[in-house]
Image 1: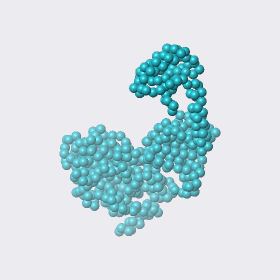
Image 2 (image 1 turned 60 degrees about the vertical axis):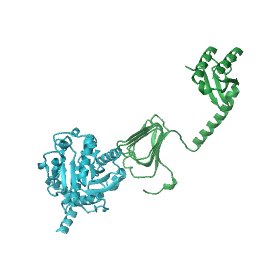
Image 3 (image 1 turned 45 degrees about the vertical axis):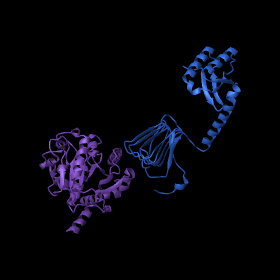
Image 4 (image 1 turned 120 degrees about the horizontal axis):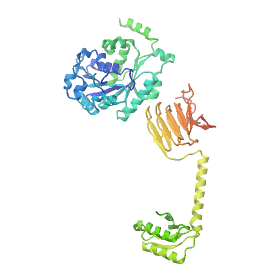
Length: 264
Length: 226
C-alpha cells in the first residue's frame, strides 16, 4: 500500500509545482514507483515542468468522469519508467472534480504506486479541498516572506481541521546572504510562527528556473544546489535522518564557482 | 401567571410567600394553580406561610389551610418578618462581604472561562463571553474576542480584544506579547514598530485611557532567555 502526499501552500508562486516535480522525480530516481497528480485544473503546469505536455491525451477529469481508464491517462516519464504523471485538465475548472472522486482516485493510485504526489492549486477553495481529500500526509511549501508564511499558517490550520495531522514544512527559495544581512526572514523566524516539522530548506537557485523551463527537474542535476536540497528532502520523506544542507555559503556565486571546480 | 405567591424550599422546610398587596382571591387562585401543577411532588410536606405585614382574617387563614390540605399539604404555621429575613440576610451579607474582600485583596477575578488547548493559526476566530486562556500561540491572522480577560501561554501575534462589551478593567497577558492589534473595551492600540523581541511575559491594561504594557513580575522565569 502506497502513500498519498499532497504538496500545498495557500499562496501561489512559492514553488508547489517545482517541489512536486522534484520530489516525485527524486523518489523515482531511487527506484520507487511514483505517480504525480496535477490537481490545478484549468491552470495546469506540472506537465510543462516535467517536459511532458506534448504527450497528454487524457487528463484527470477524463478519469474521474469515466471517459477513460486511469491507465490510459497516465503518462510515462521520459527519464524514469517507474514515474508517471496524471495531468490536470486545462479546459475545465476546479468544480469538474469532487472530493469523493478524489478519494476514490487516491485509493486506486495507492494500490498501484509507492508514492502519489499531489500538486495542489493555490487558494483554500474547492481545488484545495479536492487535492487534500485523498491525502495521507501533507507537505506545506513556503518562502521566507511574511505573506507566504501567513498563508502557510492558514493552510496548516485547515489541514489539521481536515485531520491531516503533522504536516511537514519546506522553506523554499531562501537566500542565505540576505538572511545574514537581516533582510530576509530566517528559518527560526518562520519556525517560531508555524511550529511544525521542517523537512527541508531549498536555496534560491537560478538553476531551478533553467531546469523548469527545460522540463528537467533539478533533483537529477548533480551540480544543482537546489537539486541537492531536493535530494535530501526525498531521503527524509523515506524516513531517513539527513542533516540540513549547509546554507551558510559566503554568497551564491562564489559557492557555485567552488562547486564547479570541485565537480570537474 | 403566578406572580403573587411563591413556594420556596429552605433548610427548615417549605415556605409559602404571599404578596401582602394582592387580593386574597388572587392569592387563592394562584395557589390552586401552583399546587395542581406540582401535586405529586409536594405530597405530605409541611408548609409555613409568610404574608409580610398583612394580617389575614381567620376565615382567610382557614381557607388557605383547606386549600393546602386538599393537595396533601399541611399548614404548619405562620412566620414573622424576623423569622423569614433576619437570619438569612445576616449570614448572606457576611458571606458576600468576605468573598469581596478576598477577591479584592488578592487581585482575583472570577467568571466563566474558555481554555483553548492548541495554537490558533491564521484564520481562526474565538469569541467567548468570559475569559479566554490559550495554551499555545495566537498567530498573525487569528483573533480572540472575549468579554473578560485574555491570557496566552505562548506568543500572542494576532488580534486580541478583551473586555469586548466595555469592561475597561479587562487585561490581555501573554508569555510573548507582540499582537498585530490589541483592544481592551473601546481602546485600540498597535504594537510600536520594532518591538517584536521577547521581553518576558507581559500584561496590557487601560491606564488613563491608554493601553499600557507592563512586565509580569514572575520570579521563576525572570531573566531567562528563550
